[in-house]
Image 1 (cartoon, rainbow, N blue to C red):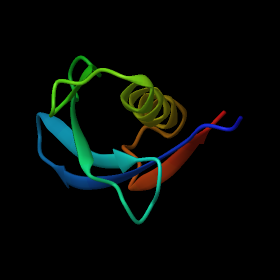
Image 2 (cartoon, helix red, strand yellow):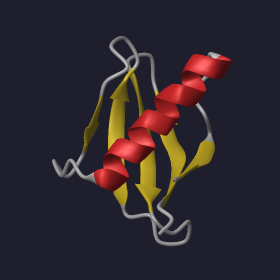
Image 3 (cartoon, helix red, strand yellow):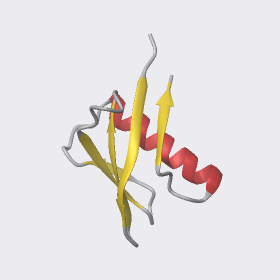
Image 4 (cartoon, helix red, strand yellow):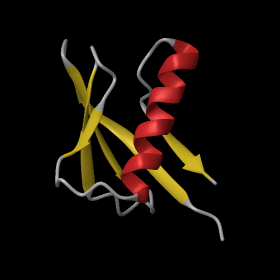
Length: 77
């Protein structure tokens, strides 16, 4: 079975980046905040689950490849 997690950047400041994420691009209700200095992220609802981990890992992966925080994207597995 495929696992899809979409994400979209909500806001960015000098310290961090906040993303909306979810399994449907039309129904993303959760958010995560990523610390730019440590590149660690936390779910804003304190629920660490598969969707959060997939979104966080993909965002960090894109940043590692491009050197910029992605505006939006998708993690598929």
